Image (cartoon, rainbow, N blue to C red; front, side):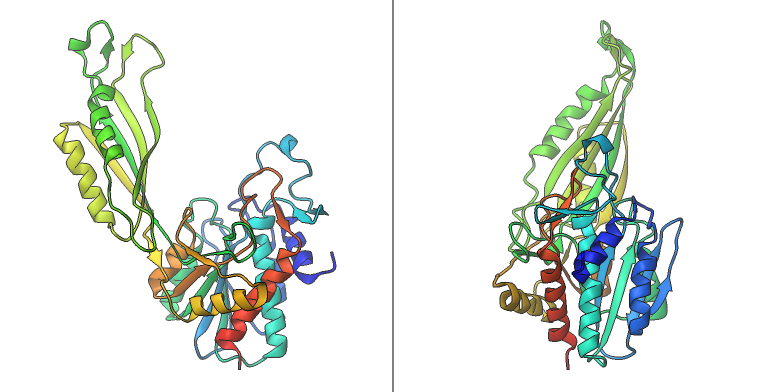
Length: 377
């Protein structure tokens, strides 16, 4: 593995950084960045490792954001090869985190090394925002770094998140935003009793179903030019004692909104409460906002990404807001132009995760090209 991006990716994959563990990944990256002149600041928080690294003192700032943690492997017996023993075979690098997102991290580092070797005094600053808490609760990771930036008055202008955004070939899709994610934990109270005597009980399942059906059937909006329509999905329902002859005393329901910029957190909450109240339910409802929607509709970063992908890879990327959530949701509220650009996402979170070997140096070249466009002199 002599190609620099492939070699660094393999080194990172070999570290079993199952969330929220970093397993030395940030040490490895810091050791590459510090000799270049980066000021590396570690920001640990509740067992999570975070790194803010900055090069330069003045001018606009291009940040590279990502995560070193990976999802659990699942049963090791299901893997063709050990997940943390990177192997190149069939034109692919195999191992947990190869695509999501250690390949991107390696490409970012190599791109910056090459750019600074050619342009030691760029027209601005370069930064890294890296965490080991993205695949987990995401409460002590990028949010901690963002808080540090706010406390220190540090400004970012553009940010590339290395999530695996590509669909069929490298660079064919770039995420310029994400939908908001709002979670609800609903408990509907009833009265437990014998199924033969329903008049002496109050079945919360029967009471709640019409309200849930109304919420599921509602057309919340039509979306817009950048987002699909808002979606309401029930993800878990639980009630009863396990016995066939017992009416349950309570019903627990988990649901989620993936919502576009046509909606607001407050508006969605009010609409749900209106339905539940109108149906006369005795309930408790706890809310958790995973992230508000964000969008980079245009600007210098998107233009640079499009130009470089066209010139280097011959692709015109689709600008998408699909998929789940990413740490871009924490960075965008700072007023930063944010895009997500990384390798194919075909194998992420799966057994036998992989990244195409040829994608790694190509991705490093794309990142280097974006540096040239925004900070080259």
